[in-house]
Length: 419
Ligand SMILES: Cc1ncc(COP(=O)(O)O)c(C=O)c1O
Image: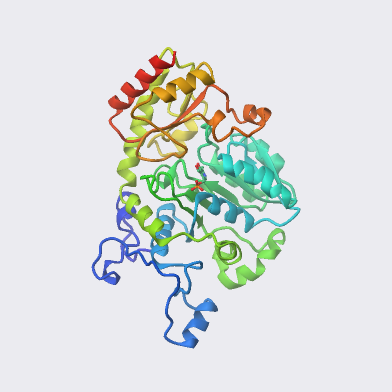
């Protein structure tokens, strides 16, 4: 962590973990593109393997460029340690699997990113693990679903694409009252809007592919450990060797040692370098993402072709108050969903866009559009799509940082053509 005075978030996002004195004066982190690291003595390497030093051994274990990204994100989230991984899904999978054994259960908000949903409901089921899905905004339902087999509660800061916003303070309190940790995927909010560890979460997960990188050039993920959860209970007796080794960072040690290393979910140093470059501008990008999203939500609501608009910043959104409280009044995220008449209208609308990019991603500085029903969710059963709110007329917009007037013009032209 930076051995500098504690600067404000806006400053730390640029300067934390910077070590130009170790980088021959470079102001950007060097890309340590190496599979392995030389060790001058046999004893030194033995000590490193034994965990007595944090020197680097082999890329699958750790890397100096990756470590700079880990230190930066850990600082921004207010964590005690972090591990970057090959993708957001690697981070989601490792964060959960470090806690799960066959026969275990966990409780998750039903508003989940599509691959997370499949991992929880299909892949984990193969190993006898049950995900109890509940409404993320219903803390009572979260509590009711917890039982003696539960290992954690899992929520997303902003549900995608339902745009619901769980009460993280209440969920954390309920989880802790039952002796289990709260894991939060903070991808859509970023630490600029929300720092779940400060609200009572124990672990934060990100897809760095999205707003943290911001350029749509690199894929990555990270698990951040708040280091505050007490793993020395009966329920987590299997954590004893990790507690003995790493104390308050027992969980991250297990994520890294047992899962990240052995599943080989390695991040490439070049991708970490690109993500560090992107992070420098996170704050100014987020300010623009948020103001553009609010303006576009209001614009879309006025359009006659648009049947409904779902954006937490709209005055009548059910979770607006929660967003205001949890996001420190800074904004409401930069994802909007809205409804057109039917799938055909959505297709005509998307095909008529000239500026907005049609692709499967979000959090890019470019504005992105997708029709989830016919793309990410095309192979889902209809009943599941209905339950997740994925309807044939739903369009998802990830609002970028272009001139908002140009975005309104493009959307307006395409809406006219979609009729
Ligand atoms: C909320 C959320 N979590 C996790 C992921 C997975 O990230 P990645 O695509 O980097 O694996 C995504 C991807 O869209 C996401 O939106």
